[in-house]
Image 1 (cartoon, rainbow, N blue to C red):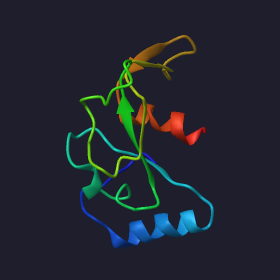
Image 2: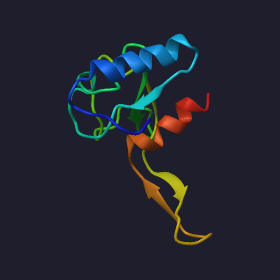
Image 3: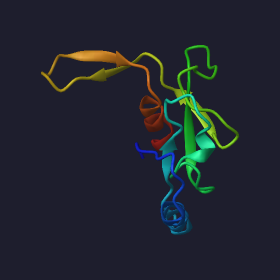
Length: 106
C-alpha cells in the first residue's frame, strides 16, 4: 500500500484489521518524511506490516520515517527499475516504495 496520512483514521485502521482477520495481509510503507511513522494511517494499524528502507549495508536508511511500529526493513536504496518512456529506459530510485515489493512478495 503506497499511501499514508498523518491524520489518524479509525475507519482505515478498522479496514486494515478486518482485512488481516480475513487472511489478507496489508503491507504498508513507513514513508519518507523523517517523522514518526506510528502516527500515520494505515501504517498505525497494529495488523499492518510496516516496511522501512535499509541501505546497501543493511542499516536503516536516513530518508525514511522511524518508530517502534516499523516491523521490518528491506532494500530500498539505489533500486534499478524500468521506466515507462520506452522499453530500454531505466533509473535508480531511493524510496520506501522500493522496499515494499521485497516484503510483499515473500
